[in-house]
Image: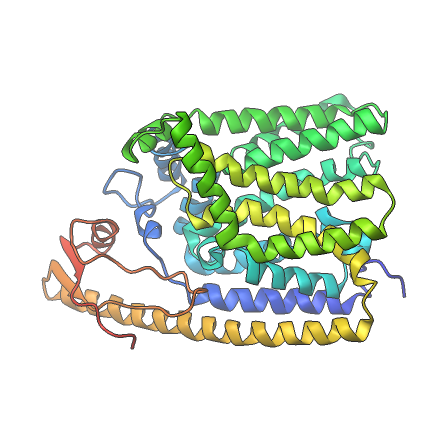
Length: 447
């Protein structure tokens, strides 16, 4: 049997893919609409529900001019809200598996396509991605982070191949076909400020290495893709809504005091949310550095570390740095750790690796079981709430009070309404159910 990945032979790899898909799909099935999902069920800033793709386009136009330039993200979100959550649950399961495979593809060559590495990648994502539930399971969050990161990583694959001296567009003889890569570049650049910015930097570095160190002529598709990337990023950043949103958050002054404060905040975010992953990367890289003599191989993990740091510290330009915005930083850091894992893992006897994986699996099963039970609890509680709302509305009730639904697991993305009817997301949830007001009646115990 060949050591490389083969659809026909590597049954372990395919079996793990299936198990990951199934586990992720179940969590998605127990994740209802949450907060922003209700907001974007309407044409933005209107009381009209999104009923067809024309409404989606109109909503995107309003959103671009009044809130944010993440047009690709909100196209995906509002399209799936239109199609329905069940379809989203299935498709996003495949997207999640694709995300894990893309991490491996960017980390190394075909030898990485093994069950052992896929398992380890899945564990790294589960335990180290900050705000996992918000970025993977919550519909709005998944479109903002998981989905667009897959788009960006897929776009980077041919640029990553340049590092290995491969020109994946070599078969495209006509320049017109190579220049067509401009359009995927636009999409990848128009996704998310941090991950799209990292994409531009990564593509540029891979191109520079191919040209300056390998002394090879850069193919036309590389320039077309990078130009599209920059154009898409520019369109996202130029959205009038960005400036309106920044003003609503207190402005976006970039004086020295503000920059110092935000820089310190970005450092603290690494410390608070990614310190274990940073320590693992550092340990593995030191061993890797002492084991590998090839200077180019030594540089690849550092390249992904650079992209991770760029994603993190680019947030000093934003007045608000939520935990979920670390998704791009964590993604590139995981790729960097994976690039050194195979060589360092060979130094450890196989039986010890199996024992370590078994312990890791046990920890995962406990956390996954708690997450599944907790999401199931909030799902059932929310269904009961929906039935109650329907009953009260049928009786003519327009101002409804509901009992609070609480969660326990950090892997549960549930976020409930506020205790004041005129606050977000109460207003949008009330509008969604055809009510004048809806509010939490009391902050009860977890039931």
